Length: 336
Image (cartoon, rainbow, N blue to C red; front, side, top):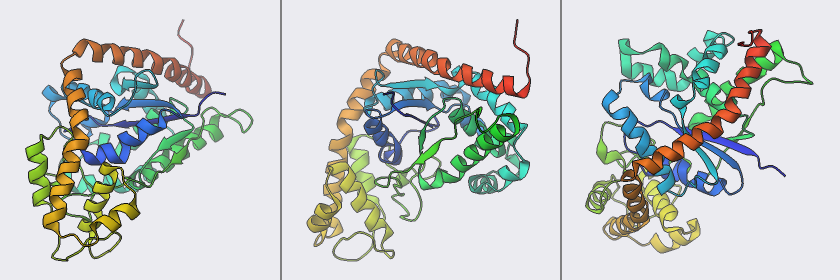
């Protein structure tokens, strides 16, 4: 029996951090054993905000190397670069022409990012959820791993698929598969080291707010030592008044591979002076093998290029027939 397919991707902007690893990539490593995983570098999305063109290609390779270093197996998963397949941009345009403008204007992330960019906000920033819908629907996934902050985007994807199916297909013969969300709770939201109420983010201007996967041990230790805490003695989960405490305990739980009950019992009587060195030591140990493999992969560009070439071919074998089916439904002629 064929495996169900999942699809996900990360923008190659900035360094990937613990939130990316614990909230997404580590889950993909587990899921690839059970599902047919399509995982990509979303470099078309990367230019919806100001970017450095001198770094874009190199950062894309870094994300590919990070995927593999974290345990994504190119023999099990399809790893590819979004911009290497023009079907993404072409399908996004077709979707633009059936997507009502008010669907995009109500997207929460657009409103938040537009405030930051002011007059420099681009059409791409408004429209990127349509491109995201194209990214997903091209590969006919059964499930899309999403965090709580991405549920609205997946709902838009489902709305676009349903609209196309209703207007141009039939109930008996839909044009596109409508995917379901796959939401995993553990590690779904890793919070900032400077504010336990904000998600750890590559776009945060403070480098202190996150632990990058490539941070050396001394930097990791310093960041954890400076992480925001509170004056309470004793550490426990799930206290709304102590978001930083909950976040740091959760990081320790995930990186140490312990249960919530085990961590709660171990840390109940600890102070921050005792816990922070423990968390730093655990974090350094967890990231050491990832960093070693990442450095080896980045030194072997030929191998990375071969992985991405194979990934593009496998992805194209699924994406191009999907795009052709949509174009046929919309009435486009077939090239001679």
